[in-house]
Length: 136
Image 1 (cartoon, helix red, strand yellow):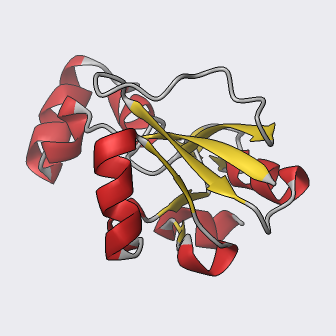
Image 2 (tube, rainbow, N blue to C red):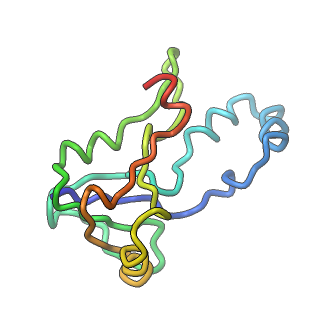
């Protein structure tokens, strides 16, 4: 079983328009790289074997725990892979993430209350981020 520690918060940068990003980029030439490399909701932060996750579920935490009995730790660690361009710059903090909003309704309700849920691999939809497809 793999236990996935998943980022479940919004970053202030998530709501920026392209025009706003360009304005920030004028002030700081590396802003777009920082923007693209931010953690996004659903990004897997760490993977643990069953029962080894050190983060405790808390209503005030930015993280949730999803336990996947039919996923190996090695399969879970593949979700930690970054997306980089040919120069080595980070395009996305993670190539893929868990689509939290697409989990089954009962799983979302359990997450809302307990900040931890157990689901099958087929119930944990994995998104491949668009920029990663080019380089992945």
